[in-house]
Length: 82
Image (cartoon, rainbow, N blue to C red; front, side, top):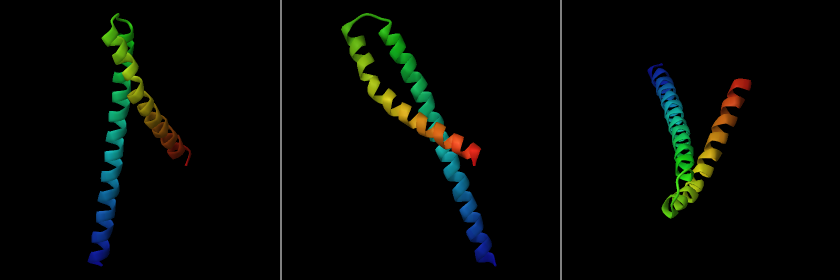
């Protein structure tokens, strides 16, 4: 009896911890995406060769974060529909 309760409590705590961690990482990814997009817009508004280079180099993390954002969006929609 005690081992069943202990196993159940451990399972619940682990599940809640992993959901909290996934939510925190998703939020961090979305905030990073917004910051990267804002930085790219500000850099593209200025002149200079270094700023243009920075603007082009920001495309790589922006595309990766867009894929993460799309995945988060799909998972959230599927959770709502299920």
